[in-house]
Image (cartoon, rainbow, N blue to C red; front, side):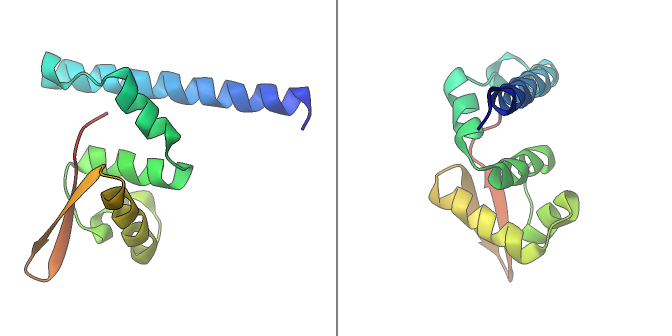
Length: 111
């Protein structure tokens, strides 16, 4: 790995953190002061694989939904989103609730 590629990856990560901080500040302005994310929650989000980050951010946006709802928003297959959502449940990031034949997922905390 060259120095230039390391620097490019670092710049991409810094941009991602800035974007997350912006989205957090916009959400906290809309939801009030109790919704502020702590640095540890941001670290939790950034420590997830990119695929799960995308799923988590989508679920944060829709607040609650099925794997099909998340898949529609991310543009990925429903079965893939089911795998990622169940992984997030095992990690303790998302709750799962069955209502009839459907399973709804909801974030445990908001970033």
